[in-house]
Length: 170
Length: 202
Image 1: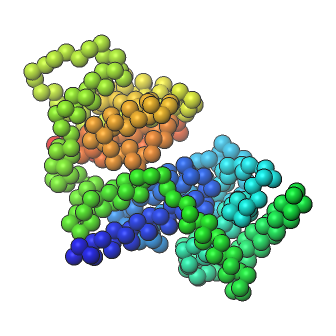
Image 2 (image 1 turned 90 degrees about the vertical axis):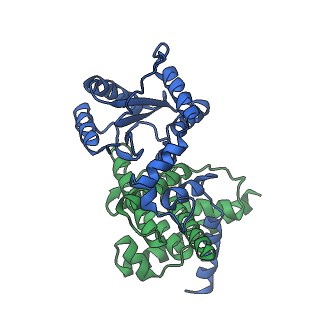
Image 3 (image 1 turned 135 degrees about the vertical axis):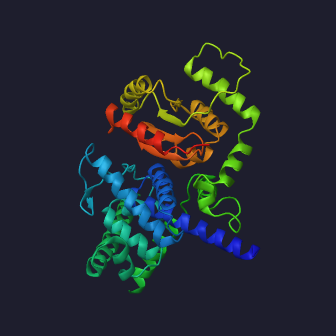
């Protein structure tokens, strides 16, 4: 009994961590990601939904769309997720000093559109298939595959460019 | 998927797996969702205002904490000193918690409407609470006050977002609705009336 309880607790923790990282991938802002996660958990409670990863991810996604709706009227339209205007991500520092791999990848991901980052995250981090991502994000599978390919290509291109600039700078 | 894609996916996975929420955040959310003991306590008993919840909350709000909260309230509202009384005062049906910060423009808009709301609901048992989150010190004080009122779980989920007015069931200590600058004074009054109707009777 105790073992099962500890296993379910660790599963819940993993699900929450996954949901937080998903929120981070969508928003690119730690504070907003924390808020989204809190709101998502509250909505799960209100709806008495299951405490599994898929449900939490969907809840985070819905809260993010709400967040975009709220922010859309006040901020500039940058890109859309399900047709909603999304607030711009926090501007990244543009110094040539940080050319290590993590920073380069971070910037490359920041340059993606939210839907591309979302699909890349769900595939690479959560390990979902294109079909599962299509279900979660209400998109056709072909669109998911296309976003995945385009996202990867952009990240790779950006990383090569930054690495080249780093070498030039030295 | 070719080798290059797999390598890129590994990099992305490592990148995100190194990111974690604020310290204590996960534990707070876990507790909110399933309670301290997963096997014995369901989410429903923790959040739906059941007998267990009431007992739990009553145990949490100790006499000393309540006295501290009243003193803090006196400080926030400037009551000019609370008069000692031997009669037991009735509890508030609704606690209207406003999350305020000096630098937050929506907070200032909401403040004007809350003032109007307070005047309009003078005959109702509503406790208006303005939490000042302007800086870390005041934020910490606000957190302590919420915990003392038995609303620590609400603080954890609300995350101290400024510019919001949260209507909390005064008996079950559960959030009923959240209002913000998008709601005008009339909508706030309607929301408060509905919240009063929803509030659990002790």
